[in-house]
Amino acid sequence: MTHKVLLIEDEPNITEAMRFIFGRDGWLVSAEPDGAKAFAAISYHRPDLVILDVMLPGVSGFEVLSILRADPVFGQTPVIMLTAKGLERDRDASLRAGANLFIAKPFANADLLKAARDLVEK
Amino acid sequence: MRVSKATLTGSRVRERRLTLGMRQAAVAKSAGISASYLNLIEHNRRRIGPDVLARLAQALAVDLAILSEVAEAGVVQDLRAVAALNTSLKAELDRLEEFLGRFPGWAAILVDVFRKATVAQNMVVALSDRMSHDPQLSAALHEVLSAISAVRASSDILTDVQDIDPEWRAKFLKNLNGDSRRLSRGAEVLVTYLDAPDKTSEAPLASATEQFDAWLTERDWHFCADFLAKPLAVQNDLQLLPTKSARFLAQKWIMQIEKDQKTLPDVEFGAALEQMGPDPRILAQQFGADIATVLRRLGSWAGLRAGLVICDASGALVFRKPIDGFVPPRFGPACALWPLYAALARPMIPLQQDITLTGQDGRVFRSFSICEASFPTGFDGPELREAVMLVLPQETAAKSDAQDVGASCRICPKNACAARREMSIMAEFV
Image (cartoon, rainbow over all chains, first blue to last red):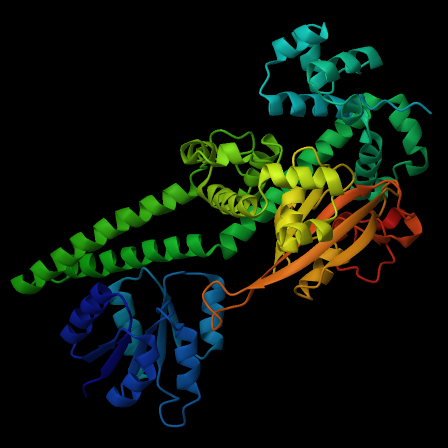
């Protein structure tokens, strides 16, 4: 069965690379660069996995995540959080906010892909 | 008991000489001592006899009293603070005066070490604060990490995917190129930021406010209209500030001063001041000026011994001109009992209050404060507040009418204070 992943990431080149990597691995990939539209994108695409950047312009990934987790329909969607900070406090904050996994930037494509597979096949 | 004040007097001599921009040799010559002796004096390594001090005062065109006065209280305070650093060592505080009298050199060294340690400590706090809270640094780091991530994502693909379509390949190469350029720009920003920007000052890591304060001190906190009328001279002078952020503060202050001088021109204001004395209310009335403008003018008036502090709505001191006996804290917030803060909470209501400084010799200062609110981006924009407090030495006022205030909580000896915010390092001794 084809899995659907939604990237919420404002870096177009990272999004492009992810599209390529996940697409090549057989995923259906959609992307949303605007954090404010993240939840709308989730309810529209209904992904099996969300990859969410912490540092989004205007709105933080933590906010997006807490809105998502409070939702009765999509609240259980697995989320991998990406952050450019790689800080302990971000890791804690993202796990507390309900992220399933935390990956610090910069990351290896293969690692992210493997983590994504593990999460949706679990 | 006769207590030598040489320790701090030496520093004062040095400060004064540097302010005047004079060479040691020149000052030594006109005071009739050798340059090497002056050097020793300036570094507090020799006592200064009364004769030499008088000649130095003359050579430096400064009142003898200014070079010699109140050093003692400061040294005593500092030694108390030194003792507070480790109370388990039980310094003989009851014999402090005796110590100062008998071993002024050792006392000076202790105080000097203590001051340097305090500066270093504050610097560490400021730096770690800067690392964790500075939005500029955080943004620069984020940019670099984002660029690295993008580089890595593209290069991983180019390396790992053998059978990549030429079109994709070209695309990722292009992205890689763009992101690596971006990365080097980001790295440059970061390096510029982290590189000690200050090559001219003795303390390269001093904060922008300190650099600004030092710059103002060198100029006696005063700019005359003639000077301000020459934009080029002003620009050159601003360039002497070692960092952009210090220049920003100075530029802002100069713009304020220019505005104030337009309202209250040097000649007219000087004449009125001479005639009516430094009464802010009368002067404001006379010129139809804002009280805040008058306070700023008086506070930076050459020849008037006045302290001036200005804070914004957060209470942060944005301007700190000390006078003898009233020294605003260099770091962190001031004493909550300052009339400045009372004024801050009540915009446009002038406040006059006599104050004494806790732990000082009971000298009375008269403070005048007012807070003004402004809406620089229009009525629907944010309300900004700025409170100004002018502090004038008051010879005649009764001490009993004065409110006792501190400099900042951490070094204030008044233990049982209703406004105490944090433990004092002096607390155990009072």
